[in-house]
Length: 299
Image (cartoon, rainbow, N blue to C red; front, side):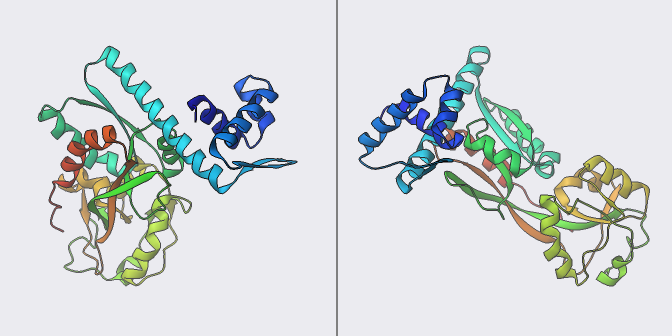
């Protein structure tokens, strides 16, 4: 199978039609149809089912589309890396992650690699899985670091790195901060600041509140702004449940404290997702080691 044929086929699949693909490729529709016929002849089976509204893949066509996406992703990664080498002798690795990992553990790990003389140059993009998964499948980024309690897209492998902690947080002078143990009933009536109900982090809070024995409270403020959450916690008696890594610096400096609530911390597995290619696997090893080699603080 010729690579240009596979890329044309992938365009047809993603455009869901031969006519639309021809427009995107700026070629005649007959040329696209001929390419698909030649590709099906080489495969020895039908790859597409034609409908009045467009096309859909057969089982063989879906498998070929997955392979074509992987090839396109590797080509994009190679183009990006070679382009970087023209201006910088170091290798390039592009990482996607969320605000929790980007707040403390990832920068700490990257600094450790820099101090050790690692020759890889990193590009970090922050976003939600809905944004990052399409990017990694298209080759725009090489790996994603985040919670592993999601459906991993086909073509990616996942490796656990460490366990994150979800903890109850308040300012150090909060009325509940000096207690030896705080019951769930003690925090139920407190003012709360929580992530929005449609966010990835909110999805994980239901089991946490069930664990500590209270219903999910009505938040006085819902936001994804990490700066706003930190400021609100420090300036008021508002409390929240968040990943400890998100506010580790504030805890270390004494600005925020962890409330000793029975059932917490609640742990979740954080890992790295990437395509299984030799280049990416080799370049990720130092970063994976740096992020895993860490002892969590005492609660």
